Length: 439
Ligand code: CAA
Image 1 (spheres, rainbow, N blue to C red):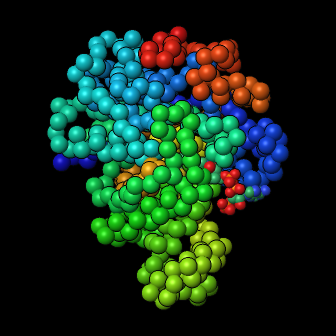
Image 2: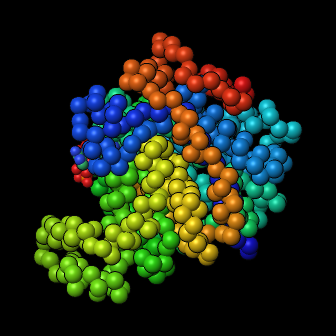
Image 3: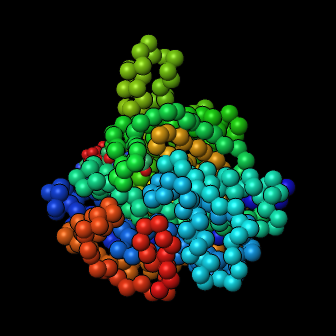
């Protein structure tokens, strides 16, 4: 079988921005450092009044198709991953296809469409579905479009409010991809959990602190499962993009991952000379004591030069975009991958044959870990992104404007707000249940 993976990617941010250290921190009467240093966030992207999950997805997909010179006949599958769907029956991919059919000759009649749901991990699951569809030779020479699109909004006053965000990531999945191939081995950690729920409600019910623990527990299980198939060493991977609800969460996941992966390697021996041996569960009678020892060891570990160098090389580049846009739920791990590759291009980092270790997570809860191999076309592909321009051009909301737009996206029909930006040759929201019109 030929290699299959991500051939091209497009990012579409919501066109509004809420500043966290200034606007948000001032209204909440909090130290700005809680957001910038603690959560690792500077701003959140928000959709304007004429944007929603469909328009962001369709606009990202249109740019992707135009850039790659594709028309509907080249696409055999459109899958959307989202936790913000407004229709319990018709998948968001049909709305997106409807948008795209307004602007291309031909239609997506032949294309298999679907919608994947498992909180934030659904984007990765959709890529897996598309890769398997191609590997099974069901694609008849056609590629798949996978779109992760969300308006990740929380109720005002909820602890998650600082971590909001909105945007779409459209990815072309194809044979002989330009960006990365997806390696077949997968580690999974999956348990029925109630850390984050949206039962017929617009905003989630979240147990924030518990959700962080569940993220880490499932990620550890996924890593253990992955390691039963693939030997790992911290130097094996150029970058490790994690699901990023906020960069502070990735800091915790990175420490856990590193501690785990260095066990029984030359690095553990080197570290032992500086901070002592890593605690092993069999040396403790009681779980609580073991957890406490592990926490003390991890605190010391993250202060070592070895760890800091690894973190700055493999992790910090993955959270650069996220710190400017907030949580995009299903899109977030795919933003992290792009962030790392963009950093590599801007800093002249050689990625010939480099590998990525991708850690996805969805509340409810499941983590998945797989490897990817960077392909020779990655640099040209990443050079096409216009994400910096999009982020700079966002309209900076005042607090009052933020509250209005938040109500609009809570489907509050009584809130009548003019858009803050003007659509420019793009799909715009045209009422619930209808597809976006191009304006
Ligand atoms: N200077 C520096 N750091 C500061 C600070 C200051 N002045 N004030 C606070 N901090 C630090 C805190 O110490 C903390 O860091 P540590 O966790 O490393 O100790 C960090 O800033 C955040 O502070 P709090 O814990 O006090 O923040 P909070 O309780 O208000 O909110 C949260 C944190 C509960 C995670 C909240 O953001 C939340 O509910 N988020 C939504 C749920 C979420 O994102 N969960 C993540 C896992 S689930 C998932 O990944 C799925 C998904 O996408 C939602």
